[in-house]
Amino acid sequence: MLVLGIETSCDETGVALYDSSCGLLGHLLHSQYELHADYGGIVPELASRNHISKLLPLIQQIFNQTGVLPKEVTGIAYTCGPGLTGALLVGATVGYGMSLGWNIPIIGIHHMEAHLLATMLEPDPPSFPFLALLISGGHSLLVKVQNIGNYCTIGESLDDAAGEVFDKIARLLELPYPGGPSIAKLAQDGNPNRFKFPRPIINKPGFHFSFSGLKTAVSNTWHTLEPNPINRADVARALEEAVVDTLVIRTCQAIKATELKTLVVAGGVSANRRLREKLNVLAEYLNVQVFYPRIEFCTDNGAMVAYTGYRRLRAGQYQKNINVLPRWALDKLEPVLD
Ligand code: KG4
Ligand code: ZN
Image (cartoon, rainbow, N blue to C red; front, side):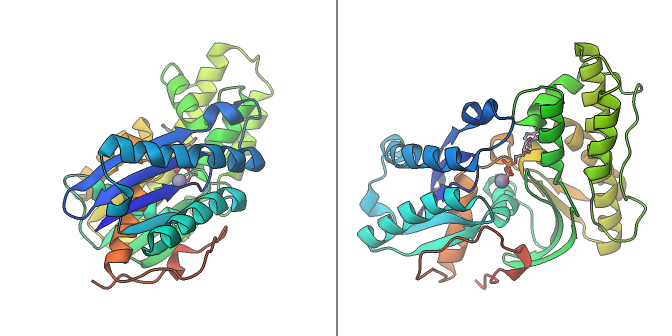
């Protein structure tokens, strides 16, 4: 089975080819960071238009690069949701056109499930069951994963996602978009002891997150300061520590409660070095094995979509009608029985 994966849920156009016997044959990505940089966040209409102009050339390029012929593709997977409606529709319509033209099945993929399965592309993948910490620009989730499609979300953000906090505070500090990498880079030069921001709701029962209070605390502090490089770096450092600690503490509580011995961390924020350092310490302390995708597959990409599509198409699942689901709960997915 040879699956073409298409990702257009947000601000990256990603394509990939996944082969059941050889694994990932190739993947390509076009990032829209420069397009949205002046606005400090994603402009949905610009995102959709850019996907339209970039997706077909990228698909052509992945065929040229891998030497695969279109007629060899046996299935298509595209991100069906959650995400920006217009952006999702680009991947959906291009995917459907190809599936009709080539007479092959197509499957719509849940973006967060694709993140969750990105570690399966590594040479030493995790085994089920496991606990997943999924942290992106739109979601912060703690999920009990029994098998593919068998998910129980035990914690989620009540307001902003972890990546969103980085992006919003970066905008406040006048740092380039996306905020996570900008904050992380600057934080390396920051003094960890100058400011201490809250680790919100960590003492409340359950495993939910809430980051809006932290955002307000950082903003209040920043407005009392001179906007110079030292203050910027110190605030970035304290913010990174607060977000990382909050994620690590909640994950620790969830591991203890579920007694799961495997942890999978994925989504854009899982690229954060400080988070990985602290989670590795936690995992050793709790005697848990922790898995991350390679850095380039933490953020959005076509490879994770192609792989997830392969697992679902292989199990006989496919879609009959063109469809996008801008809001879509992970726990509602169909289990994969293979
Ligand atoms: O998964 P992703 O590429 O897109 C969504 O599904 O949202 O995640 C993007 C998010 C952005 O908020 C970005 O600031 C954050 O991931 N991010 C990071 C890092 N790299 C990306 N956050 C912290 N540290 C990083 N190194
Ligand atoms: Zn994502």
